[in-house]
Image (cartoon, rainbow, N blue to C red):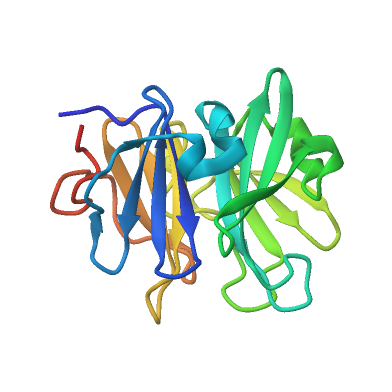
Length: 231
């Protein structure tokens, strides 16, 4: 069975909801269609300028990423914006990727971006997502690989670093040292799920609205993530 180790998952909101998986060791990616619950045919595929534009060469250095859906007239301009955080050489960078246009529209040094207060934690962050279950979606949480997480308020640009405990992340604290990446799926009408991927080809389904893990570690297979282990 292929080992899922060095990879990053991000959510895609424009059009049909999807999850993208970037496999950094092979410089490939897969596209998981949420509605059909499977990796689409033809994936994994090589990451090229044809499918990721000017940011393609940087995705092998991707640290984490997430979509920030914004309301009309707000900071995201009403578009579905995918923020991709990576190292450009030794410099923490972030790419603003417009999903509606399907192309990168800006690149920033992290220190000069709206996310600049994440800079002290950049090397430890493995995943991020907006945490508000309703508008205006200005609160984000970032999981770290040191047993902590960060809350970030986009309006005030303030961050708070806190420990992952049974109270703050019910059901996750025992596995806090095994987190590789995580991705949100808000497609269900009632619940919003955060899929937290762990070492040993396992994942946890975390209910964001109820703020608790609904499963313990579950083995990834073709029954729950069809096509994800495809070589």
